[in-house]
Length: 170
Image 1 (cartoon, helix red, strand yellow):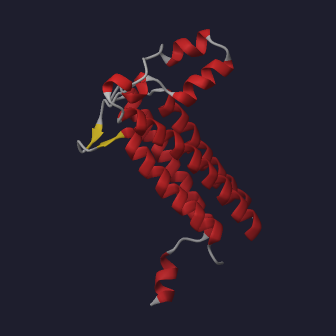
Image 2: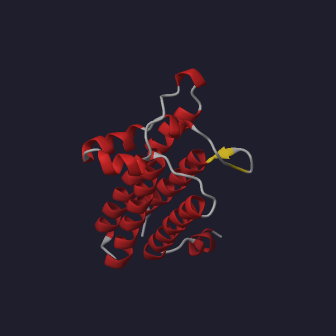
Image 3: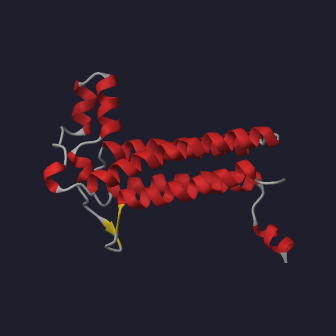
């Protein structure tokens, strides 16, 4: 019985490719929501996308490189670290979304305006802190979960898979 369950778990290289495909799908959904559903991403949303892309790139690099056990662990821990970073920013956005209305920070200018008119460090500061735009919930999955909450669930699933990769027995 245990052997049949173990046979269902993808090998390391296959699981890395599956994680990469999952990350690509997540970015595809985010782009669909932005360009088809016309939901404008806030600074924290953009930051979370960057972390999803980084997780996908770590896993793709590992799948292509096909390293030894130590390399597998290093790639997986690097991807897990990116998941933790993404989860932090998803958590910050969730926190902003649940603040009382009188405590929500003021909305700043749009991202394109900031990119065109502010130095890089100011732009990064904006992306990493968020503002009142990040507190707005304009869409909920099944009327329950905000995009930031879905993002947090995605990062939790990804970190679970990455840590499984890092500590699995060959």
